[in-house]
Length: 468
Image (cartoon, rainbow, N blue to C red; front, side, top):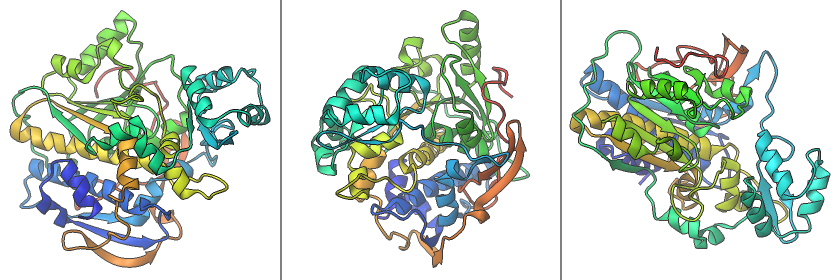
């Protein structure tokens, strides 16, 4: 089976609908040793197909609209953070202490983009807050990679030792991840079938009228909710005031949404959140598993208070296994799962040409939500969806994303061999509340669908805590 068949089956979709998808294959897009282009194409393809399916149900055409996946659009979107310009300024994606380090017996990668992660990393290494890259390199060079991983995580920081795919397959977390489906779907209650009002006029917006509470951070979750906003959903991102946010990252993934801040430890803010939840159709969470449980926001608790809710839970390592409660990021998952070893050389680890686990899982998550809404209109029920970057990585490294899967009876290809040279065709410009933006356009495309978001991003956390 081709990639899109695998992903569509994981979403519970009708296999016959895959014939609605065609691709524009472009040489040079997301080139890597692993089949990253095929994975990216499949994730975007099923997202667009799920949107077209839901749109057909609501608008009532004779058949599901055709979907077109262009490798150029996909490749540009998968590195959207690199194409972003804010008043001509290019953001900085990684802080100096977020990088690979040589250890006494191998390599380790750290993530220290946020101030609290930097502080915990330096604290674990017993270095002062103003320590330099050279200071950190000197300490790490004398320690084993696994010792650094254990020590830094024990202090609340982020560091992962380089592993081969074989080593990850033998690791307890790797075994736990491999035993799970690409998209976990669990029906929790017997709510009545969702009644979706018909759509008419203008672009086909499958998610129009639906309310999405966005409790996510850092690429994958925000990409998913940005896509739902493109498709017409009223998306409100809610953040804790005490957690820092990179304003440039918000500018990249905040299209189509509004953003507010609530302290769930305060009675007034908690009441505001419960009022939002009472009218929400979808809740998307991206914090490490268990982090929201203390606020009564586990998937089961949310559906218990809002029958028929769709809850989509995203994590780095999966909500199970010995690493189930660990924080993680795309770059770290690449290192643990063997991807960095495959993409590197004997002298130094490498990386994928994009943060493809983040972006790919983001589009898969949006697709899972859209498919859930279609199924709810038929059978009702509240549904929990669970996706993990490490599970997407397992799909990639196992070859589930097949190299060269550009054809086949159910997955057409057009203009195969067209080169991907410059991304200009898939970039746009707009004024926003944070300045003049150059940005990547959405790769989600189907006949009659939207070409762009209805609104640019505003300033993080400045919108009122209410539905539009």
